[in-house]
Length: 378
Image (cartoon, rainbow, N blue to C red):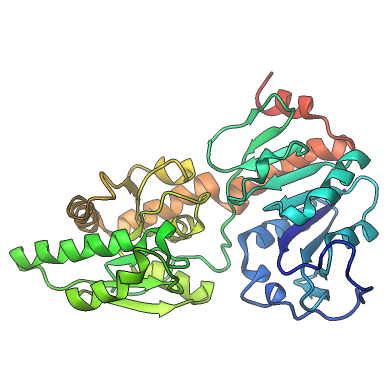
C-alpha cells in the first residue's frame, strides 16, 4: 500500500495552462527547504509510518509553479508539481491519497480520484474543506472521538503530530515568565489580549512589590485593528517583551523551555500547534477557550487552564499570575509524561495509524462501514 500525501498548494499554475516540466529537476521551492516540510510534525509522522511498515511507500506532493521538480528529504521523494493534475502521472491502482488542507485547485482532481476508487483522506487544517462530500476519512483533532455522518464520511479521532526531534525538554533557565503565542502575530491569534493582560499584571505587581517580569513573543508581526497597537502599548507601558520575529522551530523549542507559562488566547483556527508544542516539552498552558483546541490540551487539568474571561485584561492577569505561582519543575515533568501518554507519536499516534491503515490495506476500495464497526462499534 502506497500513501500519496498532498501537502500544500502555493502559487500553482492555472488549470491546463502550464508547460511540461522536468520531474527529475532539483527543486528549491521554499516548502522543501529545512525550515519547511522537513521540520513538520506531519512529515515526521509519515516518515515513521513508512519505517514502521504501516505503509509500504510514500510520495509527497506540493502544488506550486515556483521551482517545480524533485527533492529527496530524509529518503522520502517530494515532488513540486506546477499543477495538481500531474500527480496522476505517478498514481497506481490502490494508492491511498491523504490531503492536508484541501485546496480549491485540487477539487476536480480529487473528484476524479474518487470516481477511480482511491481512498481519500483529509486533515482540513482550518480550510473548511471537510464539507466536500467525497472524503472517506476526515482526521478530526477537535471532537475527541470517532464519529460518522450521513454522507458516509468517517471522522477519525486524530492527534496532531508534534515533531519530537525538535520539540523536547531542555535543561535551561526558566528566564521568561510567559511565552506569548508562537505564530504569526495578528488579531485572530490574539497576542494583543495577552499583552493587555500583562500590562494589567504589571500594575498589580507594582502594588505588592513583585519584581518586573520578562516575556517573549515570537512570530512576525502582521497588521490588524488590535495588533497595530501592540508595540506602542508595550513601549508606553514599559513591560519587558522580547520580540525576536519569525524564528525556526528549534528556536521556538528553546523559548518554550525557557518560559514558565505559554499563553494562547486565540479562539479561531483549528488546534493551533503552539500550545501542543509547548506542552510536549513540559511548559504549562493558559488557553482562551476550548472550542478550537484538542482535548489533548484541556483534559490536562493540572498543566492546562482555561482563561476565566480572556476579553478582560484584569481577570486574565489574575489567571496568568495564578499559573505562574504554580510553576514547578515537577509540573513540567507531569506535562511531558501526560503528553507522551495521550499524544506521543511513538506511544499513541503510530499505533492508531497502524489500526486505521491496517483496515485500509485489507480493503483496496473505500468501505466506511468497516471503519464504523471497528472504531465506533456500529
